[in-house]
Length: 385
Ligand code: 8DG
Ligand code: MN
Ligand code: MN
Image (cartoon, rainbow, N blue to C red; front, top):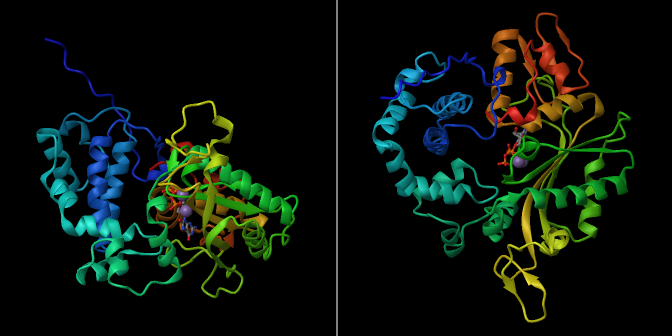
C-alpha cells in the first residue's frame, strides 16, 4: 500500500487581508457549495450568515492543497459548525443535500433570476417573489413598475448576464481612455475590480480615474459621459456627484461600503466588430454569418450591452480608491474589519483614520496603506478572497 500522504502544515491567518488568495485554487468543489449558501443568505438579507459562509469558503481558497479529509481542517480559522457540516457531507457523499436542495429550490432560482436584473436588489426581488413573480419575463408580462435602471436591466438582460471577456474589457479600456484623454489631458485611468485581480471574465468592467493636479478632476464625470453619449456609446448611465466634502458623518465612516466619489454606473453599447477586429483570422466565436458578409452575434445584433462602472477620485485619495475598488468584496470587508478591530483605525475608499493618534494617515500607494495597517502587502492577483 502507498504511504499515507502527509498534509503540509499551513499557517492560516484569520483575516482574509492577511492571506494570499489566488484566483485559481484547489477546492472549488467545496467553495462553490458554500457560496451557494452564502448567496441564499444574501437573498434573505441575512448578512451575518452570508459573511460566515463567505469567510469559510475564502479560507479554503487560500489552502495550497485539495481537502480530502476533515482532520485536514482542524487548525483552520473561520470554519463554523454549519460550514464544517456541509464540507463533511461533500467529502463523504460527493454532494451536500442542503446545497443541492437550495440550488433546486424555486425561491433560490427565482431570486437569482430577479436579482440578475440590473438595478434589482434582494429586497425588491423578494417582494416580487412573494407576489408570485419568478423571472424578468414575468415583470414585463405583469407590467411591473420599473425604475430607469431596472428598465435597462430587463431590456438588456441576456447581454448583461453574459460574462464580459478580457478582450471586451480591453476594448472598453481603450474607449474609456480615449474619452477621458479627450476631455482632460493628463488624466490617469486605472482598470480596477475583478479584471485588475486577473479574472478572465467579469460581470462588468470597473475604472478609476484621477488627475495628478488636485482639483483638476472635479466635475469630470459629466464631461466624460457627454463625450461618450455624443459618440453613441452609452445605452444607460446614472451619474452621482461627489458628496465627500459635504458629508457630515466623517470621511472614513461611510455608510456600508458605499463611498462618495463622483461615479457613473453605465451600460456601454459595444460593437462586436471592434472586439473581433484584431482577431479576424482566428476562429471567431460568432457563427452567425450573414449574406452581406457582416458578422452578427448575440441573436442577430452587431453590438452588445456591457456594464461599466466609472469612478473619479482626487489624486490625494487615489491610493485608497484603488485599494477600495480592486476588491474582492470579502477582501475589502476584511481590510476594514482588520483596521477597526485590530488597529483602532477606520479605512474607507477615501482615507485611513487613526483613532489613537486622532489623525488621517497619508498614502500615495496601496503599499503605503498596507504598511500603515501593519499588513504584509498583498498584490491584486492574490486578493481573490
Ligand atoms: P465582477 O465584476 O467580475 O463580478 O467582480 P468585481 O469586479 O470584484 O465586483 P464589482 O461588483 O464590480 O466590484 C468591484 C469592487 O468595487 C469591489 O471591491 C466592491 C467595490 N465597490 C462596489 N461598489 C462600491 C462602492 O459603492 N464603494 C466602494 N468603495 N467600493 C465599491 O462595487
Ligand atoms: Mn467588476
Ligand atoms: Mn463594478
